[in-house]
Image (tube, rainbow, N blue to C red; front, side, top):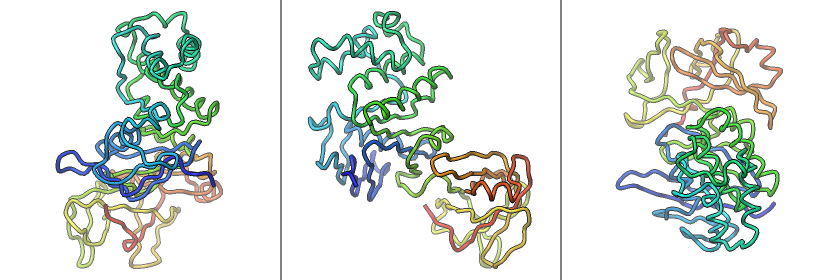
Length: 338
């Protein structure tokens, strides 16, 4: 197997007393597409800044192409680029913004051609946009110019932080297409943080779910937050909006969040064990993860969404269709805490 492009070891980073990243080990393979999902404030942007060598971690190592690298390291200066959620442009023309990194790298006489090609990748014809000043761009156009400036460098790693969150639909589509073209044309590694889960599950080779700075799953787990109350002699939990009881073991602390893996979904609600919890819900959405050919159903129980993975055959056999009433099962003794 090829050497990882990133090999992360015991990585920690804090702002003041708050730890925002705490990852023991993470490897990213060259040419792969890795998605990062998680709620706001979970550490996604902080992790991307560390990988982009913009900030120095408080502890741990970032190994890039087999070598430990520091912020703004010469070994990776033009090989790793980060596109932040809010575009940052210099108060110059579109051409000057896209050409800036190329000039620093010393591309010389090829700059005009490379700027034109980069703008074309994001759907901005050079003849119409090259001379346009930064202030004459819409939000979506500004984000595409910022992306073009990074694509012009043909980076080995393209880090995207919510690249389509604040742009119009047309710009979002062009940004997605241009990012994937970087992977196809020069085998760039893409690491994308986004709330657009459906897009990520369509394109990614791997999904990382980050919460409180830690990676703990693939994003298909259900996270349930407290407050918790003792409902039975043995179990804690909470009463849901429809009066069903979500049961858990005693939480390790009041702020702990429960990670629940749904074991199965079916049309009938009988239990097979005292440690098993069965809840009735309604299928709200189906999505197909093309890379593995698996169907995922989002099921609303009370006011909580649960996710379960199924084969296409299971989905048909159990009548898993939007609007259908179904039963989900999980085991109390398999709940994890974060």
